[in-house]
Length: 248
DNA sequence: TAACATGTTACGGT
DNA sequence: AACCGTAACATGTT
Image (tube, rainbow, N blue to C red):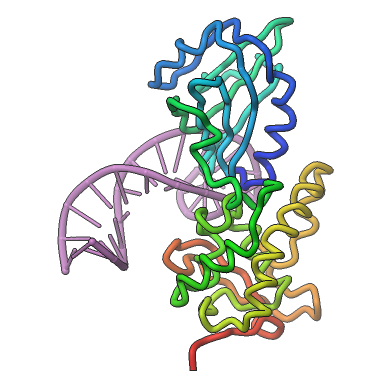
């Protein structure tokens, strides 16, 4: 389900548990989650699509994949959570159909925070440099590269490329430097638009090309590829207004 | 109703 | 070694 902005919303919602002690642990994770009982949750963070529970000397990495979901303060769900943390006053955090991994050490040291498009530490210049290092990659693949654009998913990919008028089959190294800069900038800017729309439950209506059939500009029928690029993800684009940049 | 999808990793073969 | 393709996981929606 979630791309980076959705994880930010979860982080905001779960922030109320920061500084609080875990009263009880449940769930079908194969990790030793019972070790979390009685521990104080120091902080709730995120990196790209990773949802992170910081317990100081260890931390929990949660990845929701395509089907994962979560509930806060709701115990009526019939499914068995992968991990369920109870706090005082009957409050709780539960995550479902996701991968849960307990990691040792300090979470601060575990990630390059400047690679997360949603993070204040986001470094556009560093992203451009990484892209220059993969000139042969398709832009569609490059946008999904979590080492470059942590948090960007398939919806953001399709929408960013339409926004900057670049065909997803374009090659990174063939983009004019101005276009490359737009790609990097819009990966972040669109992600924040996504966040605002998702927060207001109006994300879907703002889709320009993703899962659409005609271009909103002039009704041109969109092109569609079921499995585009190395990552084999759906692509939607307009041949009329998105230019394909290739090597000469 | 069956197929599909906002994702990633593991594994075997070339 | 690097790269490729497929399978695996898991669930709400169309």
